[in-house]
Image 1 (cartoon, helix red, strand yellow):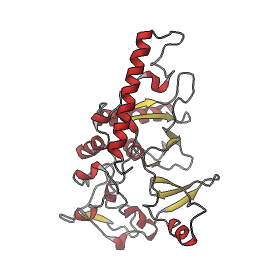
Image 2: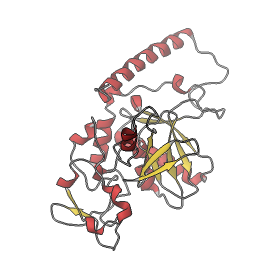
Image 3: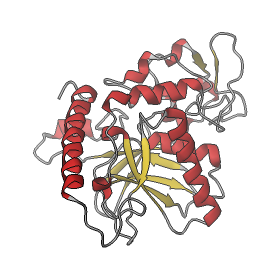
Length: 300
């Protein structure tokens, strides 16, 4: 069920195609039976997936990318923000004009030496990694991976998948079966919206075939599913708006990333009125953040 990768520091990751889920090893105090159960490659084990509080996604782009590819990454974020709406989410640089990282939990877009296209799903405590390479990850794939980092799973992972598509398991390569597991669970408001086989997050009919035949077709008429790696559909946009409702969007202000280029003026002090206004906005932002958490994690 997926592939386990481990860093030199002992951190484990469950990798399902291009989705990466950090996993914590089971506590040493557990019994042998519990430990054995926790060590299974169950994709629902400790997914540790989180949404970005307040809808603000801070990012850092690896400087080793070419100038043109960096522009593509920025354009992909711009299109996502424009489609979904700034009142739902927005991207902001995590690096100040002096080169310092001003935030924890930022999205780190890495130039992958192995030419892989993949991402950690949802916000992670220190930073959320998105691996890209300009030789193998075109513009639509950049959007796809960034949407993973924002909390979107593959569409065919939905629990209602089998009502809309038919898996032809005899044609799926044995090593790739985990890519078709239903792993979406928990309070996900996007599940209330219609299944979308045209989604930028959906596989095509030819993915992971062991014999060249289709691995998945539409249930309604048995027709081929075309892999969309061009742009978000209307349902993709609606689902992102459901994950990041505008009533829980926190207004961005310069105090969130002090020193970011364009947000502060070096050597110029703020007036008492501006400081008071900033404090008031910070208080409102914090209250909105608490409301966001209560909405997103009602069981906690």
